[in-house]
Image (cartoon, rainbow, N blue to C red; front, side):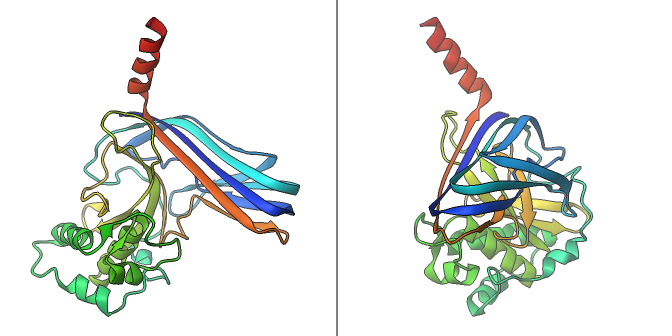
Length: 280
């Protein structure tokens, strides 16, 4: 599948900030399942710093904005070719050992409810079967309900509420997988979810679980599937904060507000629509 992506994040401050430093994890991962073309990142008024590939295989760029400024816009555009690899992350170069993803964070720390959920899967055929069944258990336990949780909601809190969004599903699956001795990590990216190909908001998150002999395998409890050609992978971490596409700090007393717009279009569909409009 050929996808065109537009991702814009606007930071506004009620008072001018003196300067802003950001670390951006906004470049698609390099592996057999996807390839990026014409990928561009722009920060309004920003100065691009050094970039590097970290131990997890993610490309990180540093940017600095010198103020005073009341608004900063981060814009990402580009095209990505994807293919269905049944969720298996093949050809992704990284240095961190999978066992490093066995530890919990504040967002994924297990409580009695998560421990009980992890224990519901009994007599799995193998590690892959266990991972699939844990993902299904999370899907059943947490209903998809936008607006009912916040960025700082933990996996335990989302499970107790019985509802949440993709971030909550990803945190909860990471938590229960680790309880069953399966290394797991949070993944950030994009999702093209409409078959008709129209643009829509599509920032997304899912979980990767390391299966011995197979490697990292993606699971998306929010959609009850493994990532396929509709998914674009950006980066990973122990939780949403660790895998955040944008991290930064502003020098000043201004209160920050945030607006995010993400559109994912199928390129061939977009081109066909443009040709039809031209001919008419």
